[in-house]
Length: 191
Ligand code: IDP
Ligand code: MG
Image (tube, rainbow, N blue to C red; front, top):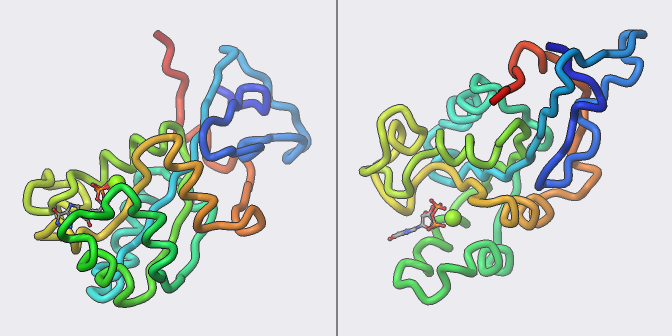
């Protein structure tokens, strides 16, 4: 299979041209299968529990090894304002003040990850919210024992991903860098 610039449609997260092969190696890619590889972007936060426990590298590596591409990454200190917005669906829950305090305890790492079905894939490998109930093999299942200190945040839908990526990254902080390794990661799912 050959991934061509024409083959690449980009979904939520507003990815534009990450797979564009335009003249990169002086040859035009040709699709034998008229394939469509749809790429998505999603937002991940490595929470203070991850930072404090020295798990930044280990958790990041899970995403990288899976084949997700990091197209934006930074460390930042969260505050009341951004957390009220980010966790607006939880305002009023008894644990909300404690959740906010835990999210401000140290800086977090924000990451924008890209891949086919990235939103669903990242949620799947992140695992169930409560670490005690998360499946072994998932990040939360392997690294945590609670609801609150559950290692990562991951966008839960295309709508959330689009909003959350904008919340944490300016356009110029996100990068497109071609079709590197794409044909070793993806194939066309013909049905
Ligand atoms: P999610 O992170 O799996 O999408 P949400 O329901 O969106 O789960 O909750 C956001 C975050 O709020 C969770 O990741 C977790 O840290 C925290 N949280 C959710 N439920 C509880 C709870 O019952 N007690 C304490 N913290 C909770
Ligand atoms: Mg959520």
